Structure formats: structure tokens, C-alpha cells
Image 1 (tube, rainbow, N blue to C red):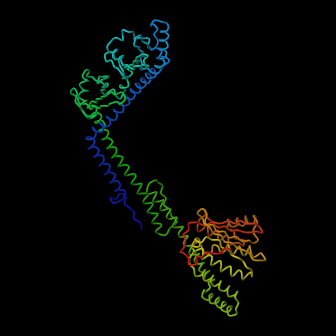
Image 2 (image 1 turned 45 degrees about the vertical axis):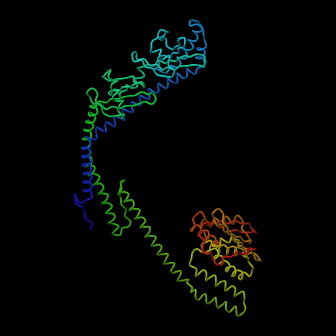
Image 3 (image 1 turned 30 degrees about the horizontal axis):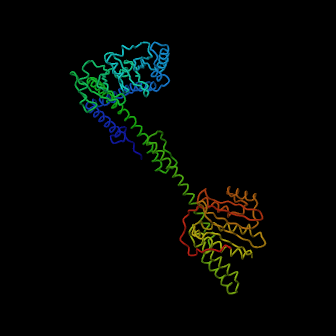
Length: 590
């Protein structure tokens, strides 16, 4: 009698799952709360560092994109020969109409380059004679070129970026010269607010940002401590680490130092330590609430799922109990997507297989009983049969009946080989001996001389094939092909290897077959229809080949009426060869 578990049992699977789940959830929550205080600051620091580094890198990339575009414009100006080169060669007076046309042409060219680039305020071209060509209407005269800062740019020998901190001006300077024709300087004036605006995005507004040029000049700063940035830069210059903690003006900061490989500028970001603690405290409170909520949800989930899991187990147990009592037709009816459902599906598949095996065993027992009855009904004592044939052979020898003696000997050898050889697979040489003895008997029966020719490569005599596979083909060739002729005929057995297959061709020169007869024969074989069909042996051979070797192998028939018939078999060419037969000899096919 099946025992029913009480509603709540401390030893039940449900209670065990419940206790284990709660223990894991509570212990995980407590450990998380204990380590959160110590790990939170490092986590926030790492997250903030990565977060700020990405934004600073993004801002730097935006800045570099603008600078690269400006450099491309400057390079295109230096390579423009139709507009720039004539300026170097032209010696027209500054107030001439020709000079006016040049200025107009250059202004138009520069204005086109400034299109869609709002951060470019002006493009200038200054010759050695201080002639100025520019795109902006805000004219620059020779007097403007005489200050020290402008003269330094005009004397530059390399492409350089110049920053004037007093007037917040940024210029890209590129000297241009064409062999010995002269020298001009291309100046591109940039908007300082647009350039530094990329460093003032919302994520960076609460962080102190300091940017220094390659010559350690302050380029941009949003820090409150104006005038002390240089001192901070010198202090961090001695630090080996690119991030860490420092104290500046009595406050603790977390600093990140970023060096741009493109602009060669150094960016310093200072995050107040109080900001880190504020975020850490807020997240710690959230973790605490999440831990309490996780415990509550774990408790509810453990109760619901453990109960449901036990219900499925109880259903499966009840089904197995029915099977134990002999009910093999039952099935476990469990609808879920967990391991219990998979176990139930496996159990159902197993029961279906058991039912099939039981049916198969019953069917085999029935066939076995029928076979035993058939064997008992048709059994012939081989010893008595051999003695009888030996007696016939002895009397024929005494009376000098050579043909009868030869036929009796062939029949004795044939029966002895077939009945005593229990192997299902025999060598081709053994199959040949069966067929040779059979031909002796048939020649005596029809009183004709039927010739059997073998065309086989010597190494193939060891090839193993199913017993009596070729004999029915030879028998059909003799009975249905050669026996209709008045005189004897020839049966040729050709065996060879081709494309990994063993090809066996049995050809006779009898009455042959028409194409209609061949198609009818092959159709009957494919339908496995033996009713009213005499060539049962061929259908049996074709069926045995497919049964043993698979559907990729089999046979076919072709021929010509009043000429020949050929049965072609396809067997695996890689079949295991037998032991080297002592009788393996070459046969004269002529």
C-alpha cells in the first residue's frame, strides 16, 4: 500500500528544498551586506574611473576630429596650385584690380572650405610681403601682424597649434613654400568656445577638468581654484600612476590623468571624494533593500516551486506503482519544462519501448515455434542422405556408369558443403565450388554441355559474400535462358572492383529478354510481389543484398531479346577478405 506523506514533513524533499533555498538566500544576503561596505568605494571608484575615462576619451576624440579636419583643410590649401601658387609669383600692387581679383578668388575658396565647420572662425594667408588674404569680413591689417605672438606664428617652420590665453584665441599655423618661388603662411583661426565645449558635456559638469597643452600651458579649466592649476599639474607630474587619491586645498579628490596621443594634450579630472561616498551610501542602502526583498522572494518561490516539484514527483511515483502492478499501458501525465518532465518523457518512451519489446518477443516466440515445427516436419537425417548417395555412387562405379558416379559425387559434395557449413559469409572460392557442383548435376539433367566461364581477378577469390548469393542467378540463367536452346550455351561470371564497389555480372547467351520483360521483372522485384512470378531467386538475391548491406547496394538486369541476359550485382568493395584459401588458383576463362 502506497504511503502518503504528511502535509509538512521535515524529512520530505519539499522541506529540504525550502530550508536549503532559504539558507543560501539569507547567507548570501548577509555576506553581501557585510562586504558591500568595504567593496563599495572600490567599485564606485572603478566604475567612475571607467565612466569618466570614456567621456574624457570621447571628448578628446571629438576635439581631435575637429583638429584633424582643420589639418586636412590646411593641407588642401597648401596643395592648391591654381589659387595659392599665383599669389607667390604675382608682384601686382596691393591696391590693383588684379590683386582685388586674387583676394576675391581666395576669399571664395576659403569660404567654401569653412562650410559646415562652425568652429572655424577665419582662414588667412599671409605672404612674405605681409599681404593678407582672408575669408572673414573682419579684416586684419599689417599692424595686427606686428605683435610678438603673431610674429612667432608667422616665423614657424612646422605645422603647429598656437593658443593665446589672454584673448582666448586658437590658430593652426602651416608654412607653405613652392621651391624658390616664395613663402606664405596659412593661418586657420578656431573658435575657443566650440573647441572646449566638448569638455563641458553634462557627465563632466560636476567634475573639475584641467587641460594642458604639450608645452604645459593651461588650455582649459573649469576648476574653482583659478591660478593654482599649474601647481596641481606639477604635483601630478611626479606621480607614476594615472589615477589615485590626492589632497588639494584641504579637500580629498580622486584624480584621473589622460594623455591624448593625437593632440598631445594632458587632461586631468578631479572627482570630489564626498561625491564618491554619497553614491556609495545610496547604493549600499539599495543593496540592503534588495537583500531583504530577495529573502522574501526566495521564501515564497521556495514554497511554491518545491510544492509543485513534489506534486510532479508524486504523480511519477504513482505511475511507476501502476507499472509495478503490471499495467504497462500507463503514461506519466506531467506538463512542465523542468527535469521532472524530462524524466517523465524518458519514462514514457521507456514504457513504449518495453511494450514494443514485449510484442516483439511474443512475435519471435511465435515465429520460433513455427520454425521448429517446420524443421521437424521437413527434417532429413543428413547421415542417412549421405549414405544413400554414397551407395548410388558405389553401384554406379561397379557398373562403370561414369556419368551417374560423377553426378552422385557432385550432389554429395554440394549437400555436404551446404549442410555442414554454418557460416553465413563464405569466400568467393567456396561459392564457386557450390556452383561448379550444381553445373555438373544440371549438365546431366539436360543432357547438354553448358559451359561456365569465370572472369575473376585472383586476389578477389578471398572476398567474402553471403552464402549461395550467386548460385540462384546462375540457376535462373540456365533454366530460363539456356534450357530453351537446342544446343548448349555459355554462362559467364565476371567479378571486378570499380569505384569502391564489387561488381558481379552473370551473363548467359540464351533466349534473352525484351525491354518490356525487364521492366516488368524489375517492377515486380521492387514491389516484392512473387505471385505468378517464376524468377523468385533473383528477387531473393536482390532483397538479401539490401537487407545485409543497405539500400545503397542491390542489383539490376539488362539484356537483348534472342541475344543475352545479364544480371549485375553491386556489393561493397571494402568487405573483409577471408583467410587465404588453399584452393585459390587462377582459372582459365577460355
